[in-house]
Image 1 (spheres, rainbow, N blue to C red):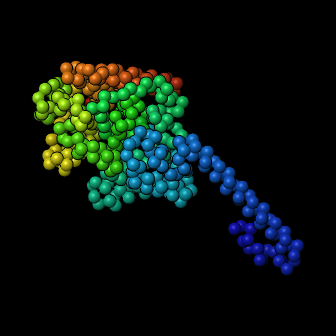
Image 2: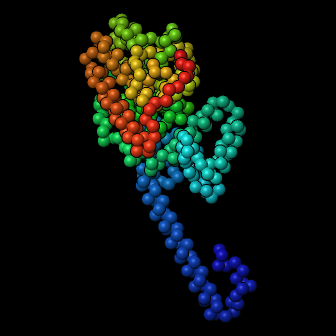
Length: 388
């Protein structure tokens, strides 16, 4: 400590008065340091309360679940968060997020960028690289959103829409899986989150692309249900395995999953690819590869909808006007299923209306925010070739 540096050469401790005076000064300095530590501890606890009850620098199971997850806290995500906090102390620079996409900024961001790229390049297995990429994306979004985004609706606190969203029960023989790209996790204009806001996390469950714990939970459910009761919504109408809702469930034969929807053990699992259209092809390929390891072939049945443009086209660009957002895809599926005679009595049309109402609430919230910030609310036209 500074109070002892060079003491023997500067002071003559043979004098009792000088020794006593020196001890007093050192004691006072220790008291100042102690008060600063207490103040830091109090401020850390305050930041913890503001970030949803989590300890500063530590992601807890409780915090993870509050963002909409149903899986255990991913080990890789937890490790990366811990590594970031340790690095923050090492470089003596605070973690800052900002700019386009909420990326790491400043001196810490520059240092961490070099470090994580070196870690990524050192991994020799493509699967390990992919999982590291996904875990880092999720970890940075968790840290950057603390105390800023509402943990339920993923909007900025001042724009929280939770009080305007009306919960609705989803028919118990249907379960949605939001297979979400990590770059869409905690995005304010993401619409997939509306499904668990409306139906609950056990009727519409989040599974993040490349997060081992999430994918394990989802595939355990698929194994239990069987391949015949798993469908992926993907608008590839040129594929022989892509069917319309009518063709997939309209047949009344016993082999058709739609004919046994009333049975207790016949829940239909619908996978919704929640990411950009450019990313959806890779997400579908990963699903097919996993299907091959589970069922012996990669022929994962897909469904194409007749749904038109979503209301979100007003704010969020899409490759073409015949593409739709995740929530609108769920609305379209429920609406088309409700038209089938064997499913017409389960209120699927009302459940579709509940999601549509939530989508309007989200659109209004995002529009209000853009107007308040002086940003345009007009959709930019893209001349992008359809991926399908």
